[in-house]
Image 1 (cartoon, rainbow, N blue to C red):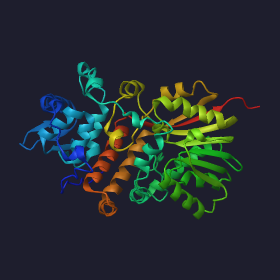
Image 2 (cartoon, rainbow, N blue to C red):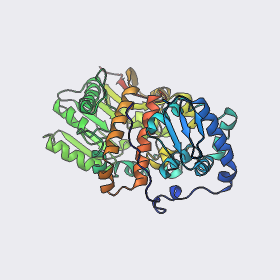
Image 3 (cartoon, rainbow, N blue to C red):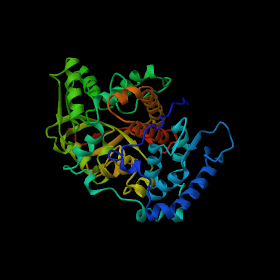
Image 4 (cartoon, rainbow, N blue to C red):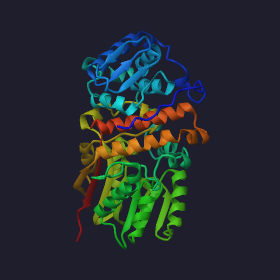
Length: 422
C-alpha cells in the first residue's frame, strides 16, 4: 500500500472553530474512565497486526516490523478523549495530533476488521448510557436535510476539485481488472457510470431521474446517449457547477438540475439512477425513498442504485449512535445493510434484479483521493482550510478506506425493476 505523508499540527487548533479539539476532556467520565480506556486500547493493540509506539519508548502490539505503525504522542490526552467520547474521541485525538501514523489507513484497517469485538461484550451494553445519540436537529426530515447536505457538499467546489479527477465524481470508481492508478481513475469512473446507465436501460428518449446530482458527470453521460435528464440535489454549490458543466458539454436542453428534496419530485420517469445518496437519507426515511421512486417510475421502469453497505447486525446495533463521521463529515447519515434495503423496498412494486459488489475498488478510489489531497495540502490551505481541517479530512479518507479494505464495508450497484408493465 502506498504510504502518504501525515501533516503535523504546527499551530494550536482554533478554540472557536474547533472547541472539542482545542481542549482535552476533563469531566468525571474522562478523568476516571481514562485508565479503563488505556487498558482497553492496550488490550486491542495486543490482538491486532499493528505496532503502537509510546513516547516513553514502550511498544505495543505486533512485533512484526512490517506491521503498520501508530505513534501515540500524548497518551494521557488520547485516553481521556477515548474515555469521554469513544470513537469520536479516537478521531478527535488524531485531529489534535495526540496520535499519528505514516499510513493512517493501514493502521485503521485492522481496527475496522475487528470493530465488532474491540470493546468487550459486557461493556457494549453500556454504549447507549455512555455515548451520545444522534441530535434531533440532524434527522433527515424535509426541514433538516438541506442543512445536513450543505455542511459537507457546500464546503467548496474548489476543495473537491483538488482531490477528485476531472470527472468530479465523488463516489467509488469501478476498476475491474485495471490497475488502480491515478491515470486510470477517470476511465474507471466512466466505467461505473456507464454500467449504472446500462442497468437502468438508459438510451435515446429515456426520461431519466437522477437523485443526487453530484457535479453532473452522470447527467452528461446520460444526455450523450440521447436521454432527457432531470437531476435533483440539495447542494447549491453542486447545482451551480453541475449546470455549468452540462452547458459546457452542450446538453443544457436535455438536462435539468433542480435544487429539490427527493420527496418533492413529481412526474413520470422511465428510469431512476441514484449514486451513493441513500446513505444520507436516514433509517426512518428509507421506506419514503423507495416509495418516492415507486411513485414516479412507470410500470416496467428500471432503477440502478449505487450504495455503500455494512453488515446488518452492526447496522442495527449502532444505528442510534452518534459517531465521528456524523459530527464532522456527514450529519444525519447512516449506511444501510442489504437486508435493510430489501425491507425498505418490500412494500413497493420494486423488486431486486441484480447486484454487483466491488468494495475493494472503493478502497483503491479512496487511497487515490487521499494521496491527491495530501499532495495538494498547500493548495487546500490556500483555500482557507486550516491544519486541523486537513487532518480531519485525511482521517476521514483513511477511516473510510480502512472500512472497505477490511471488508467491513462494501459498495454495491443494485438493479431494481417495477412490476406492472403491460
